[in-house]
Image (cartoon, rainbow, N blue to C red; front, top):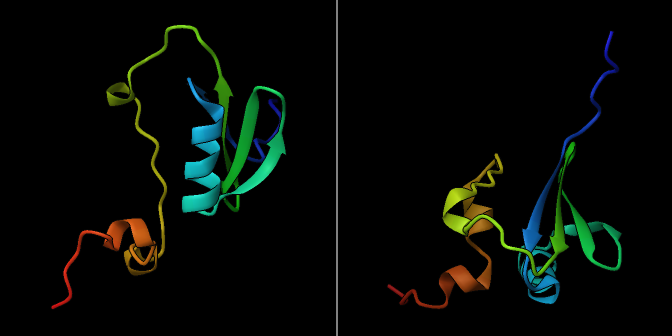
Amino acid sequence: MLPKIIYPITFLKTKNLEENRNFYSTLLKFNIALKQANCVIYNVGPNGYWGFCETSEEFLTPEKTCLTLVVETWFTFFQIPIFNQNRKEE
């Protein structure tokens, strides 16, 4: 019998780990679970992680990758300033 899976970690490649950290840590407020020389793993929910590793190798274009998070409400998510910067007050 296989052992029970406790949580998934999805690893993806990135060309610029610093830009990646700025987006996921600063903008989306994901907590860093583990930081290594060329990889950062973010906690993206109670039982899931995304890892990004910096590389200069060729990799899939973003159009061929889809990361999905299931959230309780969209209202809280869209309170992030970047989503409101181009909206006009009504």
